[in-house]
Image (cartoon, rainbow, N blue to C red; front, side, top):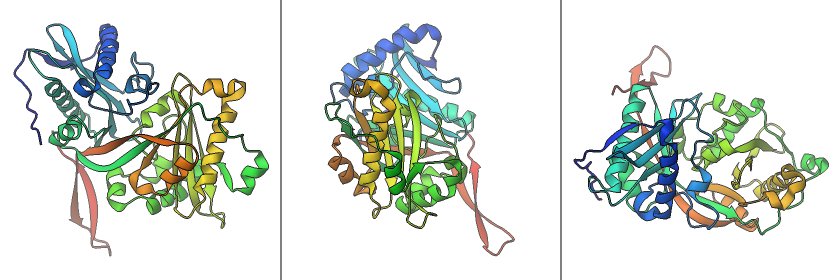
Length: 362
């Protein structure tokens, strides 16, 4: 493992200013052109129409007041940036962009990125952040950089893409959807969705992601569950969720989250389901729903196709997506850093002990 130590330089990390917007856009573009040397979050850059700069681009179209943006400045030149999205209803922070220019006399791109990550962690401890998330390709020292900063890898996702040249299936009529037991998700499904998530997700991942029933009750633009490496795309999309009911009409066998892009972005599809469920039917319905929501513009609105993240433990979902015309274009590593310490404290209850979470000081 390569050890990254911040170099002694005249550069400094500071909060971004409005006057930095032009420099930030140029920096993001330059780092994408030189992805191996400058960009650490290698979300799919191997497609001609799909790149990080086009997915989560600057200027800050989806930047919110509670988000953070820090830059590295050296000799009055912006040479690095880190962009963090903060979830309003949880204490989770997600790093969605991390860039650093290579070839500077004072510091390398790795040094710049490491200093920016350290700044985010310090800021998070001040503001009570409980979890830091990041997804990146395992190339160019990306994973090592975050692990040296205290992150732990807990999973991988395959990023699958359905090309725009493949026509979307016809939208489903209402009677066919009813017969297939597919309906719109509502806040009342929170308990059943939590049970579905628990059934299909390994215990170590569930412990780290720490979803609660109220998280499943929140529908709409700010809905981040189930988490994925491409969740920031949801800020640029109109989101809907549907459930596949079990034959008993009580449990839920599958869930699909759809994001129809409002701008020049790929549409988003995220599926979660029990292995025995007919997920191929759910995927076909989802693609048809995207086509229906595109309206009369039809295929012309499908500028960048449809993109779908799949966890490696969710097989055979990946095969169902491939059968629907998707192909894998990238694999990303999921990492997380917790600032919570779990301790056991005796309690006057039959259970004997209970688990508490306390925030570690800075």
